[in-house]
Length: 101
Image (cartoon, rainbow, N blue to C red; front, side, top):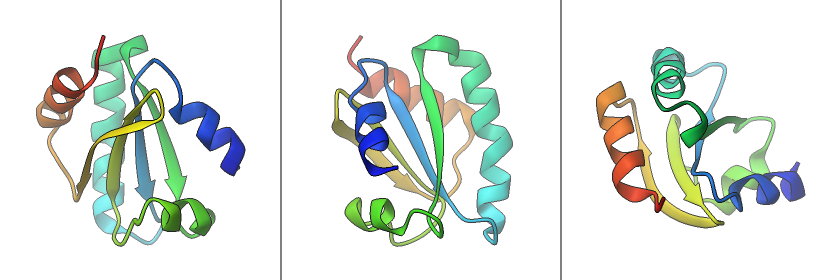
C-alpha cells in the first residue's frame, strides 16, 4: 500500500486523504460530506480514504494522532491538514484556495 499511496499523492490533481477508523463517530459524519465535495468538484479532486487501523505505517508517517484527519496533497506536497469534521463549503474552499491549478 505504501508505494501506491506515494504514487497517488504525487498526482498533479489535488488528493484529499481522509484518515479514518471504523469505530470513529465523527468519521461516519464526514463520509457523506466528502461524497458531496467529490460531487461538486468532480475530476478536480481525488479523495481517498485510509483506515488508520489497517494502515498504521502510513498514519504514523504522516503523524496522524486523531481521526478523522484530512490531508490535502498535490505533486507529493502536503498543502493543508485538518483534524475533525468540516462542512462541505469549508472543505471545497480550502481545496480551491490551496491547490495550484
